[in-house]
Length: 144
Image: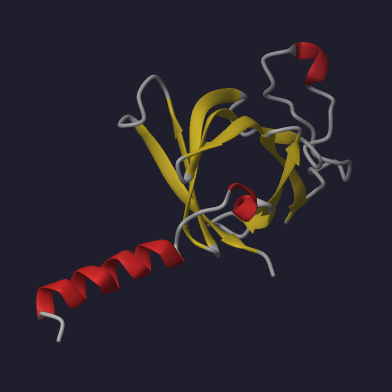
């Protein structure tokens, strides 16, 4: 008969295995916390990228598609936000996707970023400057 502590340890190890991430688990469409936009995460080679595939208000006050007007590169400011690649160059390592960047079209700034799955339907996106401790995390929900 198993001791209670041995049983609990086995149960814990089994539950960790249930949530072990595979590198392509992140692929798909994700809704941002405010419900204003969706990104689609896809793979190019061995790296992961994400682009805006839906925004709640695709047009500006002038009735034309919203553009990347805050982009620090002036030649890109007329590019539509819809379809904009905002997640770039992530690599999977030990249950997380890191080494990439996230671009914020609202500010025109690019941040270091790491992605982790809380479960199969919740994605933590952490943008930061310098070290991960100084940053912000948003939780995106998988679009079914």
